[in-house]
Image (spheres, protein in one colour):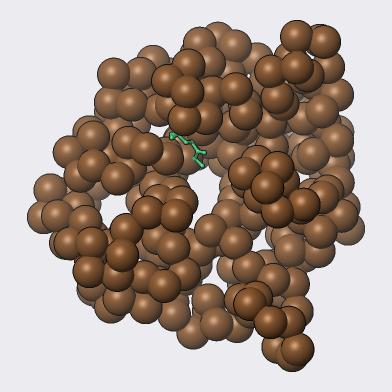
Length: 252
Ligand code: 13P
C-alpha cells in the first residue's frame, strides 16, 4: 500500500511571519501519528523560518523550485544545496505556472529532476494538460511526454522515490476539479507508463498526487480512486482548517 502524501503549495503567498503562523496553526490542529506524509512548501523567503518551526515534528518541508547547478554566477537562482541545508526533503519541479510564466521546458525540468536526486531531494514532478490540449484529445500524449522527458536518464532506484503530481492546468485555481474518474483515468495511464518505462513493481510504489482545486469537500472522493495517492493543494493549503481537513479526508 502506498502511504498517502499531501503537500501544500503556498505559491507566492505568506510573508515570513505569516508563514510561521500558518505552520504553527497546522501543527496544533494536526494530531501526531497521522498516517500520511504531509509537506509544506512555502516561498523561499520563508523556508528558513518554517524549517525552524517544523523541528521535532513529522511534517516535512519542500521548496517550490530550484536551479540545477550547485553554485556559481546565476543571479537570482536557488541552489539545491541551499535547500538541503534548510532541511528540505522535497522540491516541486515543473509546476505549470513555471512552465507558463517562466519558460520552463521539459529539458530544464529533467535537469532539475536529475539534480534533485543527486542532492537526495525528492522531486514532486508536475505534469498535466491545458484545456486546449484536453479539447483536442491529446491529454495522454501531453502527459506521456511530460513524464518521459522529466524522467529521462533517471534510474529505477531513483524513480521509486519520485512523486508525480497530475495537475490538469484547467483545474488549477479555477474551482473546476477534475471528476475523480477523469483524474483516475490519467493516474492509471501514468502508472501504466511507469511500468513500461521501468517495471510493474516500480510503478506500484510511485506515488501520484492529484492537484487542481482540491478542497475538503472533494478530497475523499479523489482519494478513494485506486491510483490517486494524495494531493498537491494550492489555495486550500493557505487555510489551516481546510488543509488539515484535506489531510484527514485523505486517510481512508
Ligand atoms: P489550487 O489548489 O489553488 O487549484 O492549485 C493547485 C496547484 O497548482 C498546486 O500546485
